Image (cartoon, rainbow, N blue to C red; front, top):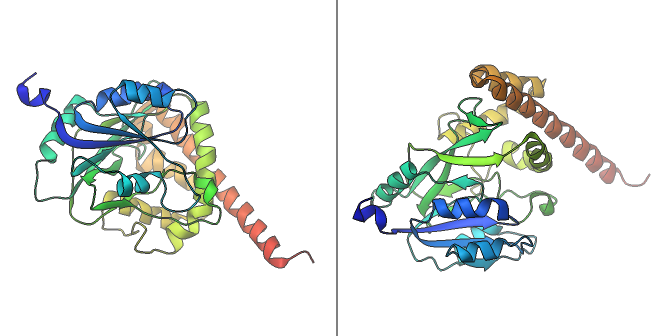
Amino acid sequence: MNEQSDARAPLSVLVPVKNEAANLRDCLASVSFAEEIVVVDSASTDGTPSIAKAAGARVVQFVWNGNFPRKKNWALENISWQNEWVLIVDADERITPELEREIREAIRRTDVEGFYLNRRFWFLGGWIDHCGYFPSWNLRLFRHRRGRYEQIEINDSALSGDNEVHEHVLLNGRAEYLSAPMEHYAFPDIATFIEKHDRYSTWEAAASGKLYEGESEKTLRAIPFGTAVERKRWLKKLAMKAPFRPSLRFFYHYVLKQGFRDGYRGWVLCRLLAWYERMILLKEREMKNRSCKSSAGPF
């Protein structure tokens, strides 16, 4: 290892957590090349703060008041960052040595404000290389004063919790892409996938009107010729009123996005994504019926 790679990079890392003891050690080890690591916790009870401190990270507690900002935007706005560049990493994600080298080079640039990182998903004992899940671009590396997560307002803010999950970063400036993917270990088994997507489907159903029917300066654009995430948002908007949404989603991921090339794990993932779409659809109808009954009053 040369002298440059031994030196800490002038980079700050934000890791939002709650009860992530099982994942946090490996995550923090993968970003140990950064000068500053800040773990923003939400009153974890499994020893997460102790693990973070033992790894040399600074721990900041976040207490949510039920309104904006949520955890990541709050951290970007209120923490006194030591460096101009911030990298946002979830506890179940890992920065590979190849990506570390790209990040070191990227933050030396003066002509760009941020970079999209690609995520590779580990599922059923192997990597997902298709299914519309790879490539998976997220704006995670940027000058912290130039980026904030979109704010999606829903009727019951508790549904989405205190941390941004599906929201994307809105960047004031130009962004480029880094080629080496980060590793994402979000779904160690099918039970975890189902548990998480049951929660996600409730949020998707509640937020669907804000995401796809109307846009504001605080939300990501849904356009066919924009960035990869803007095109994906546009496709979701088109699909909102399409018939047979669960079947359409399976066809999209398994056929159009070549999920069949991932073999058995691709088949399982695409079937689960169709189930996920059905859950969103049913919950949308349930929420709509509940709203209609509430508006009609007791008589």
